[in-house]
Image (tube, rainbow, N blue to C red; front, side, top):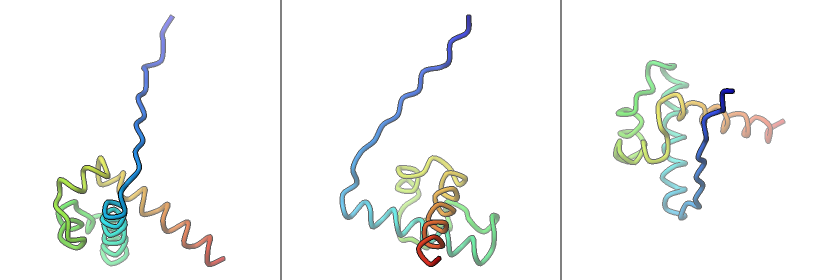
Amino acid sequence: MTTAPETLTLSRRLSPEQAARRSAVVAAARTLAREGGYAAVTMQSVAEHSGVGRATLYRYFASKDHLLAEVVLAWGADLSTEL
């Protein structure tokens, strides 16, 4: 019998400063994606546009795709609010 691998999920509350940095990162990625598509969104360019270091990006997002998934969620929330 095969057992499923165990999954560890951690959650933590962000301080107001951390939440603001994370929001700035998502906003920068959203702008870059809008202007240049998937290829324009690099962790380096997002870091430069949001004013944070790359290490900070990886604290909040494991990868570019993880970051872009969050961008899509934020876009969907905005669209839902507008409708």
